[in-house]
Length: 194
Image 1: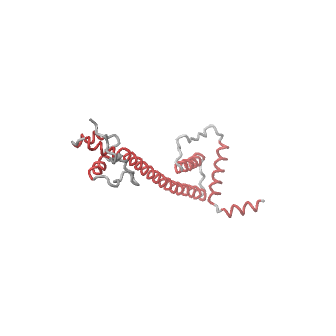
Image 2 (image 1 turned 120 degrees about the horizontal axis):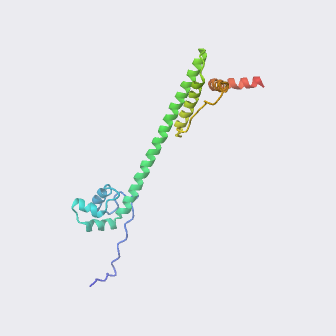
Image 3 (image 1 turned 120 degrees about the vertical axis):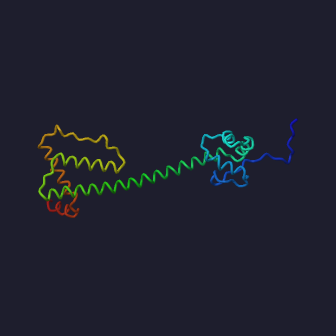
């Protein structure tokens, strides 16, 4: 025969979650906390039954703890927290790598421009294929620094007439020279020509 509840007996209220649910809750028994803190690290697919079987424990007591102290909800909150921590770490690492790539790209582009200008100052002529290779390399480096793909960037100038290739080369060389001149010089030249 079922025993009727005494009027002064009230059902247990669910325990409130702590600020970080995976931390020990107020009034949580030592035994519950000890097993919860081990179970939470046993993997997201580990059931209470499997956990108890692996340790030779009775399932009933831990199942009661699990229900009373919200083990599954707390573990889910902990896994979500770990996911956010890992994602934030990955984002920070990606930003750091992007900054490093941008710095390397800038240094390589500066070195490339300096090299082209030095060769031109010595009277060396930059061949069309070399000029185009330098331009493609600059584009590739800028795209890599920005995290963009470079696989689809291709330049096939086989059908371009030789005269047009020389115009492109001269325009590229002039762009290199212009890129290295201080802005004030370019402004003065523009004012003189107007």
